[in-house]
Length: 255
Length: 234
Picture 1 (cartoon, chains in turn purple, brown):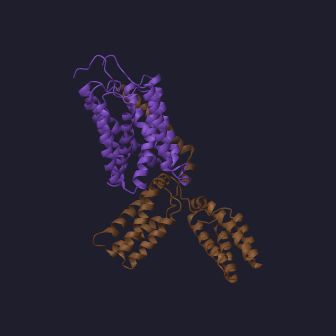
Picture 2 (cartoon, rainbow over the protein chains, first blue to last red):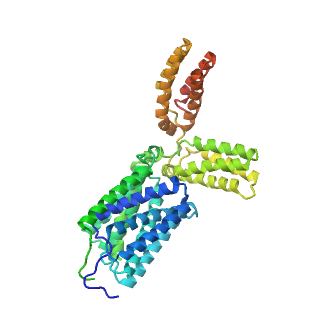
Picture 3 (cartoon, each protein chain N blue to C red):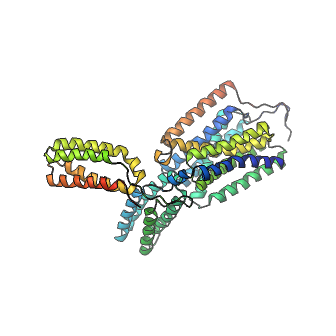
């Protein structure tokens, strides 16, 4: 497919605020998914189906933008965060699939997505999402990183019986290590990005649980409502700022 | 390939460090979280379900076990993070019990067995996970503050000054309620015993016309419960 000389990247540049919102979206997705499934009394399956429908709507909207529109992009990310969490929980709780199986399953799915994407487009660069096809691969990969991040995060937390804070520290250390590798050891930027992206899921989830869970379980006891609202508010504030200042646009002169 | 190896090494390093730390430097953390804590709220619901089932009241059993299911689900995340293996065991027993009660043609014997198994799994919540040694319930610790308030109440009651007794026992009630979550986490069973005795004493003291003998008796029982709950030998 012909890529025009000045191609517009449909996804944001990987800046500090990118990671900040990403982490908060993850955290909010975790607590919001908990809230929806438990407090609204819809049950896991109904909630999953409902949110999947909402997500599909948001993604259709997002792809139709054909450029980086912050509110649309981050709405999709937040919804993927919620749905990714719900799907993994559903598999584990309702269908009794073990966390090891789901972790392996989503690792394979993610690897397959990257393989097909690379064969088709010759690049996995997140700075070159110029076409609908590439954007489709991008979102599929994002969805699987969320599911994988959820499964592996829960697996690690359960296997070691770690509390929320300890889990958060572990995943923070992994991301720090990858960052170090990128800046000082020549770790490939795209590989580093996707790996870090996967681990921001359990990092954010641990942080969300730490804030929202009751104190007798090692949390701060803020509850899922306050935590979700807090993070949603912060995300909105940053997205408004990004929209007004037009930060994060990742325009490339050539493919 | 080289990149994948580098990435694997970068991930393995903090993971390895963390595991080493958990095993060698922080074994006490594993011990502290060995038990799943107080499960008396769950056992009391299942006791109700068992009562319904014994009377052949399947609908009552279904309704009541739904209460258990909601409470169990709401606490799932927290309990799993404290003691995942124990949570797994109880959750498995819970699923069996839920299926049995909700079966299209309920088998009474199967229901009774499933409920009994669930009670057993709930009753041994302080059993350690594989890694950590068994930590039995340790008692409520120092209860002298409570005991001293109750002594004041007993003194008021002896002088038949029930107005003062009512005021003072409210001080006990406030302090007891404030510490409930912490004490229940320490030793749910001991907390339950004292709480039941406290309820009886509160009822007796707050009666419109307090029965002196009953007041004396319930206050004495509460003191005994407080005394007995200080430490429980495994």
